[in-house]
Length: 37
Image (cartoon, rainbow, N blue to C red; front, side, top):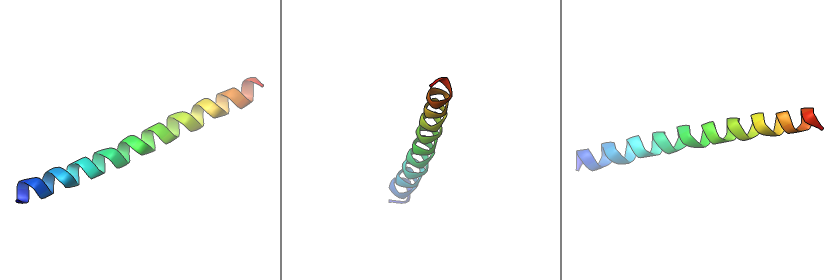
């Protein structure tokens, strides 16, 4: 059971990091787009 909890915890932290990364990349791209326009 503890292994499952640890796996869920790691997956949750990983998904959060992934979402933050995608958000930052999108923000950077949109900023470049606005700068080019």
